[in-house]
Image (cartoon, rainbow, N blue to C red; front, side, top):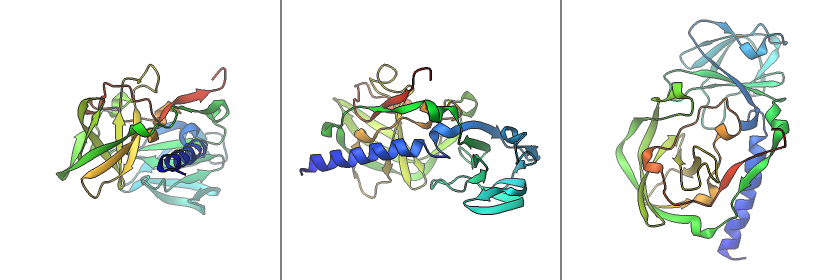
Length: 272
């Protein structure tokens, strides 16, 4: 097996893992609601009428504080009731509160405010989902890049698909210099835990691939030489559920050339 064959096989495994991950609960297809959190206790809207109808939630210093009935809730697999603190969602996808068929996390864009996100095992999108369309693997889209770390991590105001969220900050630790079809770019990536996320648009955006853009996730560089494998570009969560608020590509990350690599868009069954 050649190196290219090996990369292609790894990419096929990545593709299968992506389709499996978006089907999980919690997962991209299962998000059915969000609820802004305030300092005052409020019912969890989506749970009204169910066994956890008495649940209350409010914003706390670390995330959210719930008041939960007996016998209905598990926090990361552990039974909980009464007053329960749930921290903000981490890059590892935890903590998650389970309430019967629902999963709940507490999400914040930058720590300034927070919302409750609710996932449903019976979300209609799980039934309508027909897969993720992608371009064929192409080794030509594995590009060399140069990482230039900033003297310090900057909190940069960002645009979001939910207009009310625009202006929240993302932590930007540096730039990635790369050439795409003769265009020199100094791409801006933000931190997600210890990883970098690149949000970009290109010549396929809207016409062939998901609008307003796609994501690429990579390890935070330890040296200056970096590889951008655009075959791993993926459709952001907003492509699977309208309840997400996704970062938009900044001006620096608008690529003129068509990047025919990675995921294109979500496929839906007829009527979806």
